Each structure stands twice: as C-alpha cells, then as structure tokens.
Picture 1 (cartoon, rainbow, N blue to C red):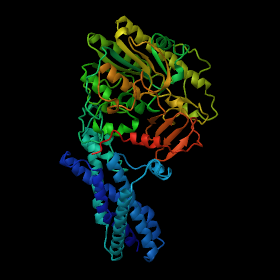
Picture 2: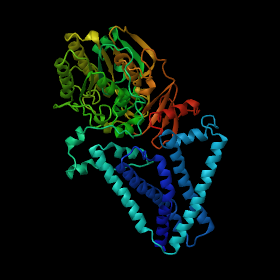
Picture 3: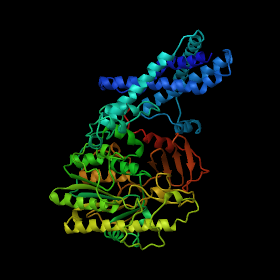
Picture 4: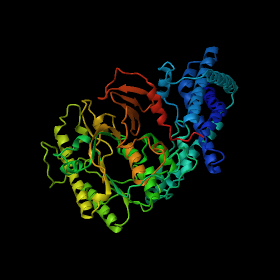
Length: 607
C-alpha cells in the first residue's frame, strides 16, 4: 500500500510536468539568440526543477494525508486536485509577471494587489476574462492529471524510473552550472536568474580539488558580456556628446564610516578638506547596509537587487565603462580583495590587469599599500587623466595601530562580538571605532599631501565617502555592526566632494550613492544619454532630493521613506517599520510603492 502511495506522489510530479514546461517557456532564453548548449541546459534545468517542484509539493501536502486514507474518497480527490491547481496557478502568475517585468512574483506584490482596493494594481475587464479562462484551463488540467495519477498508482504502475530520470536532469543541470560558474560561461550561469526558486550549486572548492579550475583562474577569469542575459544595462549605448570637464576623479572610500564621524575632533584633515571650498552632503545614504551592495550602487547607480543579474551577465558598471571608453586610466586600490564579493566580475568586469587585493602583515600595511600603489600609478603616466578607486579597511575592523593616538576614551583595544548584547554599554566600543576613524583620517591627509605635491588639486575631483554605516545599538534593539537593518545608523554615510572651480557649501537635501553615477558620467565624461539609461540617481548639484530611496542587503530590500521604512523581507513580504526599526502604525500602501517595486525590474529585458 505504501508503494502505491509513493507511486501516486511520483505520478503527480511526472504528469504535471507538461504544463510546467509550457510555463517554462515564459522564463526561457531567446530561441533565436541563444546557442544550442544554453537552450539544452535550460531544458534540463526546467525539467528537473519543475519535477522537484511538484514532487516536494506532493510529498509535503498530499503524501502525509494518504497515510490516513485507505480509500480514495471524493473529498480526498478534490483536496489533491486543489493542491495541484494552486501550484500551477502560482507558477502561471509568476510566469506572466516575469514575462512582463522580468522579476519573479513576491509576496510584496501580492500584498499591494490585495490590500489597496485596486488603487495600486487594477485590471481591465478583458484582462480579468483572460485570467479567468486560463485559470479554468489550469483547473481542468489539474483534474485530468490528478485522476490519471490516481488511476496509474491504483493499478500498480511504477513512477520511480520517470522520477529518477527527471532528477538526474536536475543533477546534470547543477553540474553544468557549477562548471559554467567556475569558467565564467555567462550564458549558462544566467539561467539561474530565470527559473523561480532555482538555486543551483557552484562547487568551486570541489572543482579546484578535481583540477578542473585553479584558484588563480577563479580570481582572474576574463568575462565576456552575455548578450542574451536579463540585464538591460545601460538601456542604450553610452553616448559622449555632452560637455566634458578635463579633470581626474578619485573615489576615496573608508569602509563602514558613519556620517557622524565627519567632525573636526574625529577626522580633522577630512573636516578641513570639507571646509576648503568643498561640498558636504549632510543627508547622504548608501545603496546598502553591506559592502557588496554599497560599492555596487555607487558604481552602477542601481540598487543592489541587480547584483545577481550583473554577476551573471558580465556587464561592468556604467562608471567603469565610461572611464574606459573616454580613454582614462583606471586604478583600483583596495585593501580587501575584490574577488569576494566579486567586484572583479561585476563592477570592474573585463578590466585588464586588475589589481584585486593588497598584501601586508596587517590591515594597516594593506591600507598603506593602497595609497603607495596609487601614488606609483599616478607617477607612472602623469600626463594622462585617471579615475581611481581607493578603499581602506581599518575602520571596518575598528582597528588602531598600537603606537597611534587614541584620543577618545574610555575605549576597548579589541572587540569580542560574541559578548555584545542589548545591555552592553556601547561607549568604549564606539570610542574604539572613533579612534579608528581618527587614524583613517591620516590616510586622507596623506592623499591630500600627495595631490598637492603633484599639483593635482586644481584638476582632480575628490570624493570621500563610505560603502555603509555602522551601528552601536543606536536604536536600543541590540543591533551591532552592519548588514542587519536599514536604519540611518547603517545607511547614513558621509559625502564630501571637492570639485575644482565648483565652489562649496552644505547640502541639506537627501542624496544617495546612486547620485555619483548620475553626476560624474555627464559632467566629467560628457555622457549625453538620459540619466535613466544607466542610473536611478540624480545630479548631486541640481537634483531635487528624494521622498524615498531604494536600498538592499544580501537577503532583503527596502524602500526608505522620510518617516518610515517599508521592508521587503527575505520571503518577499512587506513589513512597515518606523525609522527606529519598530513596527509602524502607518501601513498605507500608496501608489509610489508599486513605482518603487517596478524599479527593481526596470533594468531587466522585457523581450
């Protein structure tokens, strides 16, 4: 009897596969543009993935009920049919959403649909009629497939061989993806962005052990752009018909630097620079509470939700593309490696001879090496314009050399993160962090001294900022560090821009990291495209500010408004929070929420 019940589960997965494969065409790469091996790999992945979709659904929702059923009753058959139909309907809705917007169905989208009374999302009569007809056909298919599954199982037919075959397809598709990821065969890795809930393995460590790929190859593999990928970025080739400014550009980022570190006491040299005919943006925010998303948003001008499609496509940031196409020298000088997160395969994809890390006995050696390598880079060809990214790390680790000044006391010398809790006094930890920022300020002093020595201050745009903030239980909810919430403590970062012949001042309106791309590309490189082709930002000097901005972490995204935070959590549900990350009484679902949600799919191909 148990074998028949398991056979029923198997046949439900097998017999529902044809309709799943129909909807798989909605997610598929272009047949005309994609090579045969990509279409074959996609077919294998779709067969195995959707077989598992129904197999797991039947095991979880139907098989347990069969253990209490000796006979097939009308009620039990109806229950099974409803489960099958609902699984198909969920897949169908996701397929149509993906075909229209190139992102998958989320609970947040359903929330907007069901809880706004049609004010945000509404359908015409013809659309409603089409939906009803398709739902009716799905239900009819579910009735037939379920009836056949029961009939075959009762008569003793076995489904095991079919299920094993389809699971082998899934295993093979995972193997292909793992190899493609290691070798950067982007049209194959891009498949993972198409199928809903498809999370194939990478297995880099195993492939290294097997000798299929080396660690050096993983770090330095040159990427080629996937022409048929989902990433529609930039929306048009960059054009250079605008007015260019003949200046160098330096992005100097201090990892994990909060906005309130920009004071005369904590960072005197940076503060002095900010007062010397420079602009200080007082209400400036990162694209993320993490390094990956913060650097991504800064260079791409897009929210970090696009990370995966950028990684799969091999398309570099518009900033780097403009630098290269304008004939600038590109210098990347980071203390930590840029191979994890894979900035070498996203932001700087395809850059030849890319410097991927620093060497040194400690974090201070690595930070100093960034500056020394930058100086040598400039001196090597002083007559040619350059764009440089310098990224130092000591503040991220709250690290201060033993012989360095520690003006803020009492202060810890080291941090045991395991001991932090809601009752921990943040003062000595925060003072250690401020001492680290005080030391990082010496890097800025070194940089400015060098630029003055080389007579570069009058023709170099200097941008000083960070990738994200750092929290010290600011809101009393036991949050420490970053990458855990979207409050100002983790998002509010400094921005100082010293631009030759542009004057200076304090800017009070809200700005974001996305605005750097929207400012630098047209003003420095003369990019004449509409900004929306390559960024969701605004010009730092002429923008109107924001009623809300988009941000994200590794798992979640959020819409940060002036008085609340709308969180799209890791299961896709909307949660409404106040600015201290407590549940908000304001749960209004206004039209701008849909506009914001659509931005998450704006740079994905629609055809």
